[in-house]
Length: 297
Image (cartoon, rainbow, N blue to C red; front, side):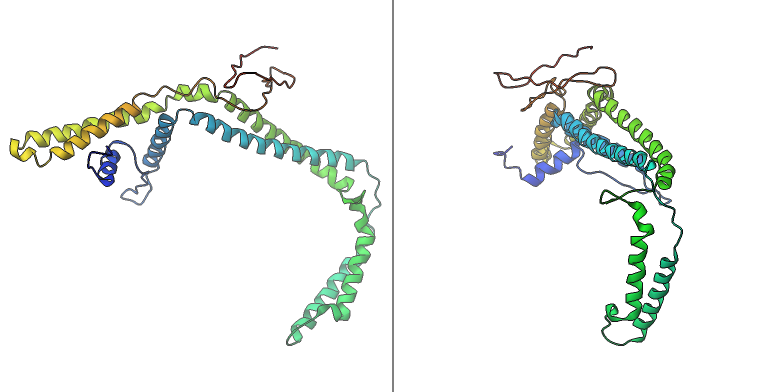
């Protein structure tokens, strides 16, 4: 419509009558937000993206893979913690028989706080006797009972702490692994699930219904006018016809995502919980997508 003398505002206005342009969040008469309407608008907006960009499905799956990497990292951290606890159970440590240094450090801190509160202006607590007693007692505790949590230059759990932590870590690991498997299965079945939902039909049906309503309104208006009066509205009717024709053609010819998405780089053999495979690479002399056929091992 670049040479039609229609302004961009006029074109935008008629397109918004046909295609969802905003997501509504209405509130009913008693002040409750209508989440059903908002969800319907979000669903329709998402469907519009999939119709206009059929291969956007692959981007959604890619985002899911990034989340899967986060879950794998979290599970690896839990495994490291569990292994560290198992290793800590066998450590030989001495019981903590004296905690007087902690009480002495507490007393020194209280004296230090009282002295700082009584002074006006700048205060340098490191010059006070109470601070010296505080640091001496802290160092005494760290050099004594504090050594029970040090091993190979790092901080570790004591055997008692490790035993108490192992059941909770095992439970977290089980829950994390079940969630990981669930997400993997969802991604594996992502394309099939997308096809079964038939999401594009949501926006296509809406566009066709809006187009029919708009043309019906134009027909009723023109029918009620005289031939001369119709000339006042015919320009807008023509714009509506051009817009509906373009929109119906665009949203009504959805062909779905391509079977294969062209990628650059190395490929790896497919595997899951029931079919294991060794990592593999394939070098091709021709560019473009490479068909991957399912195999049972």
